Length: 195
Image (cartoon, rainbow, N blue to C red):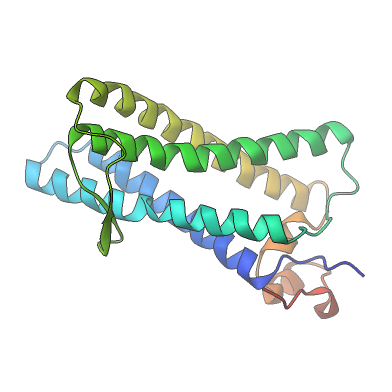
């Protein structure tokens, strides 16, 4: 019988990325709207970069997992249109999760600023310092950040719809197994223990 739960690694990557994206978005928004001394704003921007750049590595791990694992089938009761819309939504979400940090990386590279990763090391610049391109990459990064916020909210709302309205296993398949058993009819035997 095919497991109805994602693997432990898939769940860790999913929820870690969710936290990193939400925190990075919040810090980035705070940094861009801050009207405080420049030192505080510069520090908050560096914090934003240090957090946001983690998504590149987490996304690479998620894609590697996805290429080597088949996700559980939990939406057999959905109409074909909704299933296809979900696949398209996930694809756009993945593209945006990659494009957003790359746009920020290009923005920092064009401005000649460092691109730290969790305050451990810095990414190499993607291009030579080119001030003329800074406003272009800045706008792309800003627009992508709002698109990602919209997609994440849509993703969360659809997960809640599937759980509370459609009564399917989508949400339970991605939460920890102990929580899946607690919030629904999930049985311990259906867990996947591989990573």
